[in-house]
Image 1 (spheres, rainbow, N blue to C red):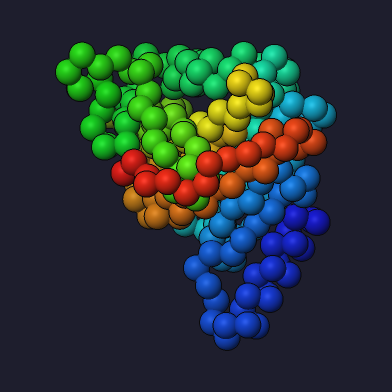
Image 2: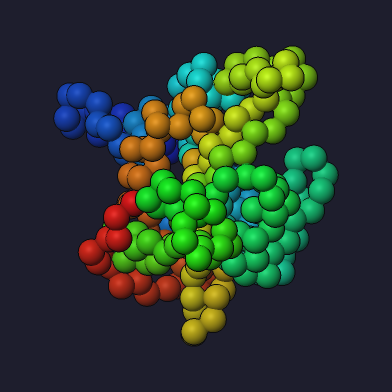
Length: 244
């Protein structure tokens, strides 16, 4: 609730000053570890579980083309070797940002998923390219490097869910996932102290509707510490961005 209130008052102040709603509002995490520009009017839900994991979700207005009708963006923080319990009761743990990418592609999406780079050309179709050799982009606002990839991968829909799903050739309801990721490693004293994961979990049908918001999110992302309560970090600041 506190997160929602902060977002509401910041948005209300901007509205009062301009007399018309802006497209984006500035959001600062409760712990002050990062700021980002989020879409105007979207709900904000924050979650933190002990040391090593934190998450902020930005949830947009209902749209039938998104799974469960909920377009969203998220910013997550992971500290290496710190287990985090998921909602289904299982545990996740990563040794590094590269390990996160590998586990995500292998375990969440599987070998049949189509993995995209910034050019929207499937990595599997690039000459001499390996799907795990994820391209690096430069984030506009911070100048930080991020590993960027998109994944197109169908998965069975939950029983009874029809919103944001399609029917496959066998007559089964599926969630045609088309997710985008920017994985941002944070170095302290020359070593990776953890990493942020900026995500846009869309569907194939709704994907293009929110890509501008996701580009704005990752372009405006500015970390100040290595995760909640972590040491302060120094970033290079804006640099010419590699095109997304």
